[in-house]
Image (cartoon, rainbow, N blue to C red; front, side):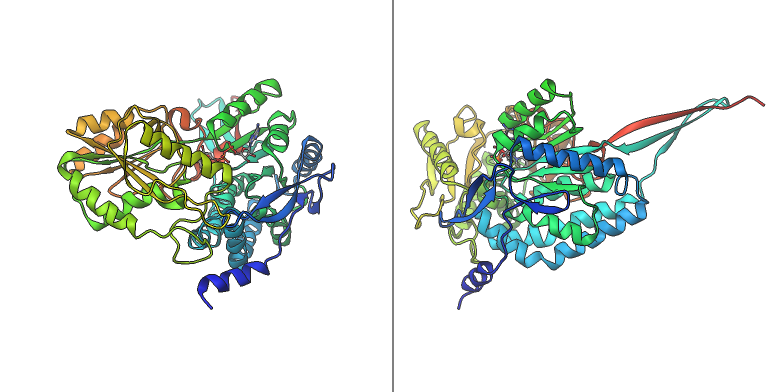
Length: 498
Ligand code: NAD
């Protein structure tokens, strides 16, 4: 029996929850309607999941508001809230294997990535924000002798969290952990393509001691459950990760309802710059390849545009191709697989459309460029294009597939100019041995995260978000993330003169 067989055997025994979680209990949608979630590696249906709509959202919001007003979470002793968060983190760790297998089945991501993210990072997020709770202080403002003034942070109330399918449980954790840490009640909507791991959170949170109504999880379609969250007049804020198109809808819903603030984490078209002063090493090549292909390129900060100084171009391309040739695409349950399945057949076709557009516009395929037919699964071969020019569709639009595009430049200034020539601003990687140049480029790139001499999105402690059309002023991760879910109150006390 292979490791993949063993994983499949274990996955077949994992319990699948298909109901929503509202006010501390699993429930079907009021309408009784369901939608089907599929295994992207086979195309086979996995489960029929409650299709929540506006009626369910309204029930969940009422439960969330009751819990918030009751104060057993929102106003409890910070040490008690911390203990519950740490217990939740421990329970998530205990269930790491089961949740990783479920994520792999539901999303087509490789089991290795699922283990790293779901069993590794997700519990760490709840632990990190749990530990921050009793170490967060308010401030005292400078005043004259006649007054004393405090600035305190209070939880905003009921938070609506809407997340995408590319890192299903991790994106939920990025938002849930800081929202719960601040004392908010939440209504979480996972993506309809990958709802199953989020649906397991309710029971674990209750077991950890989270009061009923604080966490509500509503699977459903974007235009139904998602829209209802965006439009609900008693949701105090929305934090959203997903496409720019839906981000714009959410701003509209907020304008039409209660002017709720909307935190947006959107798409990207991030550059990977190899400057004249770079040293081409195995590590650099590994970063280049992972920057474009990790998670099958279904990554908002994928560095698809690789802008390479001509001095290094031939050596870089040769080594990148040698590495990508080694990539295995296929069974996500196999620990040896590098790229699993695309999330849906529609998305695979969309990515294939970009491959065609690249060819039509004159980019040259050095590797891949096809969608292998793999017994019903949604696969795309890792693809490397060269002769990419900055005006091509594949250089301007987010592909969200395993595609690496090469752009050769004659000078570092040209590299900077091309890197900046995009409507997005999420991430950039810069490779150079020249420390002055590294700082200059880090400051000159209009993006939320710059990584130097490595491809990294940072960690739990560092804020993540986008400039330009990649996001709003809000940030996930770091202590900054808690600010999304809080409002600032000034308490001004007049003191009697003695
Ligand atoms: P999407 O916008 O289609 O869907 C995201 C979520 O929004 C899903 O839960 C969906 O059901 C919901 N939704 C859809 N229509 C809605 C509507 N009318 N009203 C309210 N909610 C609605 O995005 P996707 O295809 O799931 O995810 C891919 C996108 O997410 C890419 O653009 C990617 O770059 C972005 N992303 C960004 C980050 C980041 O941190 N910046 C991280 C991961 C993914």
